[in-house]
Length: 409
Image (cartoon, rainbow, N blue to C red; front, side):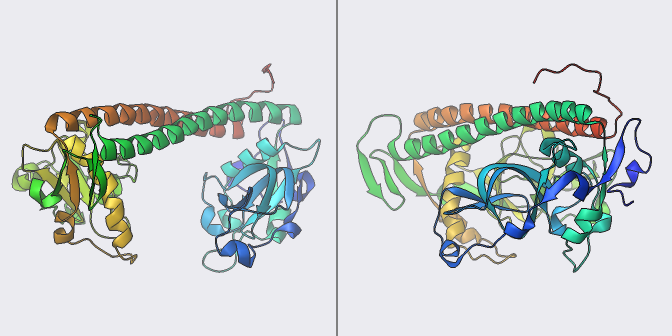
């Protein structure tokens, strides 16, 4: 019998193994691609699902109820990476996901989805370079299963944490939308109830000036540090493009380090707290971030610019919020080639709407409060996701047993 993961070559006490077709029903015959009208951009009310989630909304549905969708494309699979998810209600599924439903008395959709997400399917992916988890392979694979009562308790625990994660993500989404609306209001109406005037960037308060980025700022290059310079211990961070997230935050998960001596030999590339960095080349050009003090000292790598205010007439935090709005237009004008790049001359010409310094500070203070709220909920969501991963491992390997626990439904 082929197990999804060699980790289960020896089953935990009280667990059994069954082939997948014995514990779930497979409904792939109803999968269909979008029709011509929907491909042309028409939107409906029913979710249209793919390998890893909802990809569109259309006018019709093929499924009604609770199902588990399993990625068929091998590109979505990987050790301990989510490769299935649950859909409820009315929806349609394309041909990139298998559609299954737990059989009564054998398993539950929630437990089944979680055990599939935990196990390693890579050895069973076949076909071309992308790979496919075919229906023929899927039905013959074996999964490890505890008794149904234990399955339900495991599912209950994991679902509780998942609901907490979803709650945080809803708050993050709502707060993000609120921030977007507030930014539009503040950058078009200001805080002084002034009459508005029409400018090249739209309506702004009458007293505001329109100046360019180049009028207020210097634009400085990073440095092309060599990979052979990296050290494994005792160095300082080399801040790279991958450390900038699209939401304007900083992540040091994939951090590389340079010798401490580089802080002296490459002093002009040392970052400061609050520095604004802008990715100007490659597939992720347009990303912006401000440097937190927590990562310093750090050096600035190539493929990004440091935007440094050279005038006392602009607040750096206000500038950061303004650029996150303004760069959207520049991105829309830019080509979509993977190695496309921005010219400094174009970036210097980006127009800025500039109120008094006092009003700038008031605006960035209000936006900063929302940024803080977003950061708090993002941190909470990250903690919950870490907890979920830990619980998933502990429960799916029976290192923690729940069959003796009394859990409320």
